[in-house]
Amino acid sequence: MRNGDVSFWQHDLGSPARRAPLAGDDRCDVAIVGGGLTGLWSAYYLAAARPDLDVRIVERRFAGYGASGRNGGWLSAELSGSRERYAAAHGRAAVVSLLAAMREAVDEVIDVAASEGIDADIVKAGTYVVARNRAQLARLHADVAWQRDWGATDADVRVLDAAELDGELRVAGARAATFTPHCARVHPAKLVRGVAAAVERRGVTIHEGTTALAVEAGAVRTDRGTLRARHVLRCLEGFTAGLPGARREWLPMNSSMIVTAALPADVRAAIGWRDPATLGDFAHAYVYAQLTADGRIALGGRGNPYRFGSRTDVDGRTQPGTVAALTAMLHDLFPATAGVAVEHAWCGVLGVPRDWCTTVAYDAGTGLGTAGGYVGNGLTTTNLAGRTLADLVLGRETALTGLAWVGRDVRRWEPEPLRWQGVQGMYALYRTADRRERRPGSRETSRWARVADRLSGR
Image (cartoon, rainbow, N blue to C red; front, top):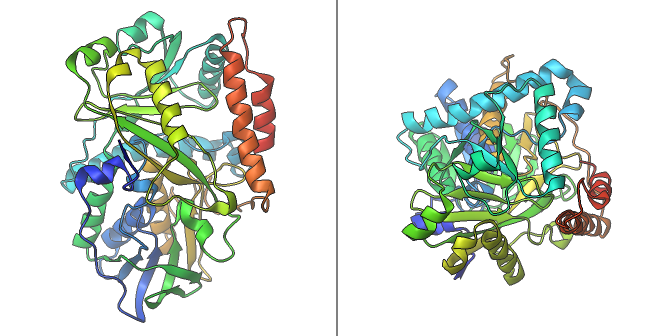
């Protein structure tokens, strides 16, 4: 089994040709720090609106090295964070608009991929989220009621009983599931490499192999020289903690994945996973999965959720214990996969704010902007955030610049060792809650999960 190599997705395509680094001190109109999808989408829409602008992207490794090229491949309309928390600051109508914008962003990514000739294995087949015990089933019905309270219709979310789900996808022990059509399966590395090529066709320069040492008003200081610009956008998401003074802003939460060999025909028939809808569950330490275009199952979960001091992985390498746990979950969900080899495992980090809510911000006075805190829902959110940053930089007052996440203050995380203890304790409690809820007599959410929710501030 291969472990690391950034991700299966990147390994599947082969190592990308590296772009030239910054060649000493220089100047441009817009400097973007981070070559993931937030930075790339921001550059894409800036260049589309203003082809005369000199837009540069500074990237430490290569475009898509981080979460943009390692994620689970869910082009989902899921909004990170508490809707009530957004509404407290901006009102309920603003949150409803944000939810609609997220759904529209799924189709926007699909449309751009089509218009730019990006073949990223995109199929919009929706998402199933399964409940496998009584406590999870109670959360399923509570979640549906909560979504309907926020305006969701039968077209947005519906409930399938066990028999109905079995006709679509056979998950061991499933009691029911929700289904939403607002999600597409995607090959993340194909998407991010395609978007990178598209921004270059629009005249944007990507400086790879260039490490940002400091982000300041009017300048990005790097190991290759200083890039000065009127507008400087920090788009580092889970890698934000690597900048001076930003260690406690967005916590780099770790998530790991495994991918199987292509499923044999008899295993595929036993599972019945015909349409490539993505799959999640109502566990507290939840999993997420997709069926790839070449017939593999790619499945992910938290594993070791956080490294002390906001450290990050080395080229995606993950722990053997995490691989074993994810493999056990794969076999638990789909017993027919017991004889199918797991061929690749990897991990990456996602940005988590202390209040678990996404932020898009821009200061017209300093020219500094940022977006991030996607809490694992970044594949679609990066597009909407990038479009929003572009409008903010250009001084436009649009529906996007009025969204409920714009201009939010980011609450800082606790210092170490409290940060490490808190995150490790939170997930230990969630895992304990999941074990207790699997007991035959369990009917409702474990009190240990409620303690973890209070600890996390979610």
